[in-house]
Each structure stands twice: as C-alpha cells, then as structure tokens.
Image 1 (cartoon, rainbow, N blue to C red):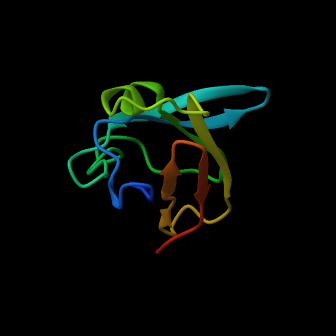
Image 2: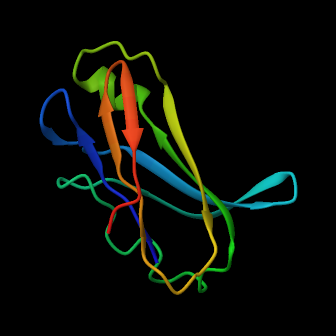
Length: 111
C-alpha cells in the first residue's frame, strides 16, 4: 500500500485540493498507476483501492502545486514536486508525505 498526505508547513495546515499522480517506472517510461486530489485533511483516501496489487519497482508521486499556491495568492518557486522511491517488498505500507512551503519541500518515509 502507498499512501500520502500534504502538510503546508508555512501555514501549519493540510494542503487541500492538490492534484497527485502515482506512477511506476517501466524501463525509461513512467506508467500512471493512480491519480487523485488531496482532501480537506491533505490526504487521498482509497486512491489504490480499485487498482491491481503493488509490484516491486521504482515509483514516483507527482504533486501539482501551482494552482494550490495561486488560490492562496502566493507565488511559489516549485510548480510541482516529485518524490521517487523504491518498493522492494510490495506487502509493506509506504507512507510518503510531502511537507510544503512556497520555497521548499521535504519528505520522509512515514508509517
């Protein structure tokens, strides 16, 4: 299972209505696995519920940020953020959060 959430650290609030795409690397290409939009808690509940089981491989989560910051009348340095990570054991839970501000972002493997 892969889950994510967005926290706007500049505001101390969830990142709401951010489009997010999960893709898996297949040779030199990225194949979309799922897409969604963060809810009022900055999460995308059930975005893999109706998808095939995970397989080992390299994955990418892409967060589209321009519209999010525009809604707050802020200019942002990063129009999007991508997090690329490896899944070696698909039976594990991979929680990949994005900590966000207009001029920086970071991530970690959560639980």
